[in-house]
Length: 254
Image (cartoon, rainbow, N blue to C red):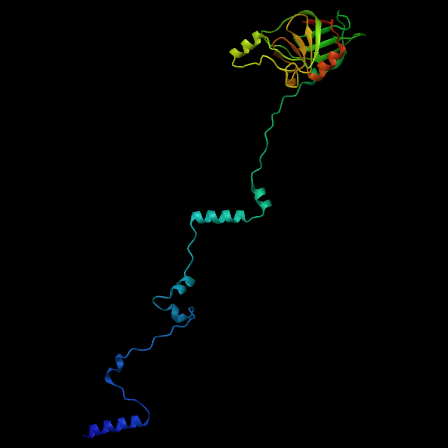
C-alpha cells in the first residue's frame, strides 16, 4: 500500500512539472532520420562502411591510362602543337638527282701544233685517241674530242663532205633497227630534228656512206668508242666545225 502511494505521488509530481508519462512500448517507436552533413570531406563520413557515390568519386585514385589511350593523348598533343613545330619534326625529303659524268677537259677544243702531210682544210679523225683535227695554216690544227665506233664498228678511209644539215632528221638504217630489236631495244623509224635527236645540232655527211660527223644528245660519251661508226661531237663543237668546213672538204678517218 505504501509502495503504490509512493508511485502515485511521483507521477503526480512529474505531471505537475510538465513531463508526459512514458509507456512501456516507447522504445519501439520509429526514430527520426539521421541528417547527413553535406560536407562529404568530414572525417566521420570517411569512417562509414560505405561512403556515398560522389564521395567515392572524389577520393579514389584515377587509374593509369591504357597504352592505346597514351598513344591517343600523344597524338592529340602533336595536333595541338604549332604548325612550325610539326613541320620541324617531319623528316626532310631530299630529291635525288641524276649526275652525269663530266667530259674530260682533254677533249675540249684547243689549238695544237701540226706537222703532218695533209693540207689546210683537211679533217683528220684519230679513232684510236678519239680526236678530230681540222688542219690550219702555219703548222697549227684545231683539235676536238669525238666519240667513235665501238668494237666491231670501227672503220677507216677517206671521203668528201657530201652534204651538211642543221638539226638533221634521223632515219635509222634497217640493219640497225633489226640489230637493236634482237637486243630488246626498239628504235623508231624516224626522229625529227631537235634536242632529243641523236644526231644533235649539225651533221656533215661523208660521201655516199651512212656515216656522218654529227652532234649528240649524250655529250658525256665524248672520248669513248660508243657509236655504230659515226663520228659524234658535242653540239657546240660540231656547230663550230660546221661553220669552218665546206661541202667538198676531205675527211680522213684513221
